[in-house]
Every structure is written in structure tokens, then in C-alpha cells.
Length: 403
Image 1 (cartoon, one colour):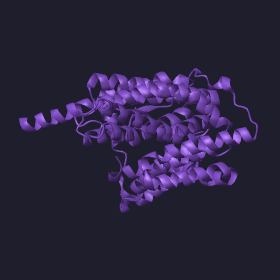
Image 2 (cartoon, rainbow, N blue to C red):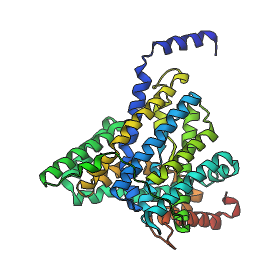
Image 3 (cartoon, rainbow, N blue to C red):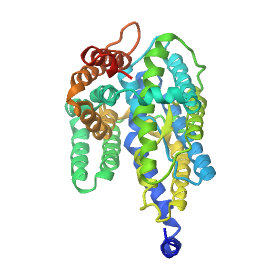
Image 4 (cartoon, rainbow, N blue to C red):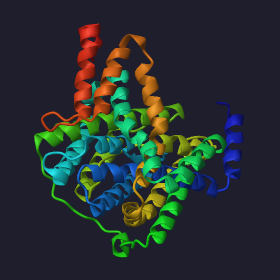
């Protein structure tokens, strides 16, 4: 780059108001939070958390990812955005209760965090995860997401008065302003839920809205480790950390892999006793905060992510209130918002699953087993989907078809 070009870029950067990267960070935080917090609450509840424990888990992932972003962005002067594992939360929702209940699920979260840390320091493990065939990993993810994406259709029957307006607003915004579609749908859902609660004279538990941490001692058993920890680790790495790294590379940033894995893995382990399932490198938030729209100078975009972290510290305070509202809302409202938030991810996963004709059968088998929700020996469908998909791929393509 010539010195003249560098001087022009410097002048442009100096003309950018200080609020631009801060505003980009605020938008990224609000979009990320509202588009998937319902998935987190649903996933934690399905594996045995009480409403209070689910609220604690949401608070935990907000705090751990916020602290991780504040430290990493400041330390490396890069827009290293973190997020909770939305595919991981969807996985929990499809897995359901495991042997040992909620304490066993918490133990599985701790193991997931340890595996993430190990990935940062053991290159062979990272290469092994990266070598899982794309169609198999994405098919497993698609099967996990599929039941949740069906939820809005079921909710139309159970709570049409609240759910139909949510769907109409979401569809309209998909055409006019897709980024805000889920946020607007969430706003309509909250409004509809409040009206329904008032009209039916149900009472909100105001004391439950106070932010609090519900600590649970982890319990370890092999069913939870194999059925939750392993699939959660794989889907978090394959659907979040690896794509997040690629997105950062597309904007010219090289993520400090060991530091990022250490921060997210330790954050997951620390947040697990409070109910946090997993945090990881962000994908969508990275695209919002690492792009030139955040700041024309790549060296100043870290401010956007620092702002994301600050906003999440505030959003953590809303976890109890949201969980209470969701628990009191009409049946299907939470599932509707969660399902709408995951439709785009389902579409991308299905596209990757069916993209290669040679391995399409293996991908479809993986998807079907994952979507079936079966549990064998107390181990959920996601694990068996990986086994089935790799087996079919090996039978049809020979040993060379496997990693």
C-alpha cells in the first residue's frame, strides 16, 4: 500500500465519529441476544433446568462471553466477538433429559469446556474436528434444528391469537429489513404475551425477575458425557468456532486460536455450575462488528466488540425477567420465537447436507437419525446420527471417505 493511500485512510478514519463502532456493537449485541436467547432458555429447560436455573444459565453465558470479549478485544486489538452456542442450545432442546438430570447436564457442560481448551493446545484434536465431513456435521445440525423450526406451526394451533401476529411481522420484516425480523417478532411476542397474561389475570412472580445465580454441583456419568458433552463440543466447534475463524479471516484478521479457545473453554467451565452450556467464537456478530461498516480502520473495529461486551453485561440483568415472562406466557410463544430465529440456520445446514451428490445419502441418513430424537442406552440422537452418517459414508465410499 502506498503512503498516499495510507494517509487517505487515516484521514477518513479520523473523520469517523466515535459513536460509529459503539453503535455497531450495540446493534450486534441486541441482534445476537434477541434472536436466540429463547433457544438458550428452551435448551436448558429441556435437559432438566428449572425456570430459575435456566435464567441463571442465560445470565452465566451473557457474563462469560461479555468478559471474554472485553479481555480478548482489548488484549489483541481485534474485533474478536464471542457468543453462546446457539446450535448447542438447540441440541440440548432436541436431546431432552439425561440420566442424572440437571446436575449431569452441568457436568457435561464442564467436559465440553475442557475439550474446547484442549483443542486450543492439541492441534491434532482440532484437525480431527475440522476433518469431520461437512455434510455429516451439517446434517446432524439440521436434524437438531428441524424439530424446533416446526414449533411455530404447532403453536399456531395452540395459541393463534399471539403467534399469528408474530409470524406476520416476522415475514414482513424478512422482506423489508431481514436483520431486524427476529427482533421485531420478539417484540410482538412480548406484547402479545403481556396482553394475554393481563386478560387471563395470571400473576407474574416479580421476585423471580431479580438476577440471581443458581449454582449446581456437576455430576458426571458416561451417558451425559457421550450424549451431551461430545455432540455439544462437535456442533460448537463445527458450527461456531471454525466458521467464526473463517469470517474473521475474510476481513483480514487472524484469530489468536489458543487464546480464543482458552477464553471460551475456561469461560464455559466457569459458567457451567451456574447453568451456562457453552460459549464460542461468534459468526453473525463477527460479521457485524468486523466489517468496514463498524469502522473504516481495521485497527479500530475492536471498539465495536468491546461495546458488545459492555451491552451483554447489562443484558445479563434481564435474564430473570425474560425467563419469568416466558414461563408465564401462552404455550408456544417461546418456541415460536426460537423456531423463527433458527430457520436461516436450518436452511444453510440443509443446503450443505444436500450439496454433494456423492455423499447425499449419508447426509440424509444423518439428518433423519438426528431429527428422530431417539435415545439408545440413555444417549441422545445427535451422537447416533454421527455414528450412522459416518458408517453409511464408509460403506458407500470405502475407508478413504472417512477422516
